Length: 176
Picture 1 (cartoon, rainbow, N blue to C red):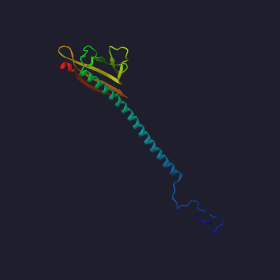
Picture 2: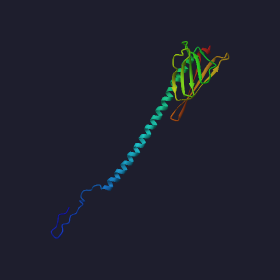
Picture 3: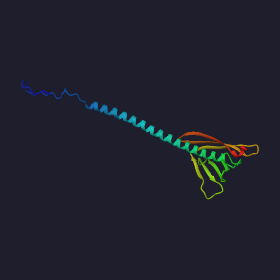
Picture 4: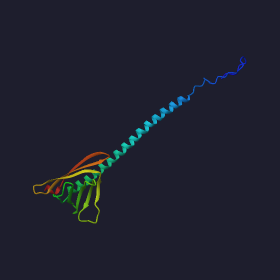
C-alpha cells in the first residue's frame, strides 16, 4: 500500500497488496465444486459396495442353509433302516437309525424345505431351509425294489441369483 504523496491534490491508494498471493472467491467456488463432485463419487461407490455386500451376504446365508440341510438329510439317509420308494420327487420319507419316522418335504408354493415328524401330529413342521426355488429327491433302486441311493438337488435363490447345490447318499443297509 502506498502512502499519500504531497504532489497531488488527491491521495491515491493502491487497494490490492500484491505481495501476498491469495485465493479469489471464484477460485474458492471452483475448488468447492470439485470437492463436492469427488465426495459424491465416493459416496456412490461406497453405497454400491454396501448394496453388493448385502446381496452377497444374503446368497451366502441361503447357500449355507441349503448345505446344512443337505448334510443333515444325507447323514440320515446313509444310516436309515428304510426309505419310502413311493414318495414323490419333492419328498423323502424314511425310518431313521433311531427308529423315527420322518419326511423331508419341499413345498414349492412357500419355497421352503420342511422336516416332518410323521407319527407326531402335535409338533409343528420344522423349517430347514428357506429361499428354495426347486428341489428334487431322485431315488435309485435295488433289484428287489428298495431304495439304494438318493440324489438331492436344491436350487436356492436370493436377490435374483440362483445357485444349485447337489448331494447324494447311499443307504448303507442296501449294501449287504
